Length: 115
Length: 109
Image 1 (cartoon, rainbow over the protein chains, first blue to last red):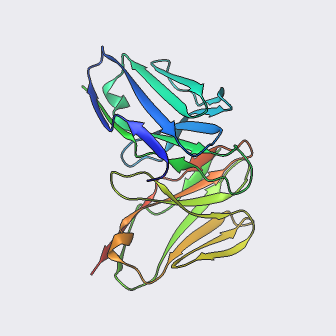
Image 2: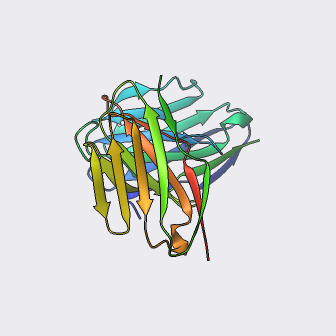
Image 3: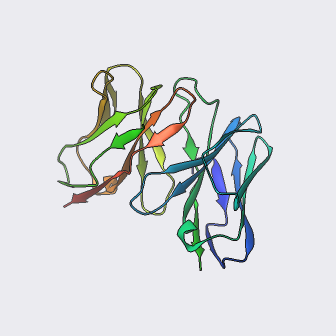
């Protein structure tokens, strides 16, 4: 248990569906992240929020839309996804972005399958 | 560009020592992290190096040479539960973590 929870843990959706992934951190951190983890590929950073403001959008297609309503919650809204978007989506949080030793704490991920 | 290389797979025997190497080329450097990830679980933090040298934490140690763009994770007295993926990640000056593809370690009896 890392103090970061994600729901749902598994999600199967069609290409025309709209769904949302939720992340909540109970660590009092002020930065939150979305990553995509595909088989045999490195973790890819998607979005970074610091103090509820988006500070990084790593060339992610617009069919992925993040939302950070407060420092404890992060959402990833999904619409008209493609089968190649099937992956494990990981949320993480940290205290600050660049200060020494501020490791990121990861949630267990949402396993997404797009049919 | 940004490039982090680590072996894809390694196999070792229970009770032995294994060293997982990581080489990196990044446009900025603000620390190197090692994470452990068991199948179906969240990556968990193992170690952090920002200065050259060895950091020891129980059975796990991590080494960094900034001039060579090189790090390794050393696991001693291997246990079956150490079978996992080990992720090397470099933090850039903006705080972003750049990950290698991970090394899948299998510990055999």
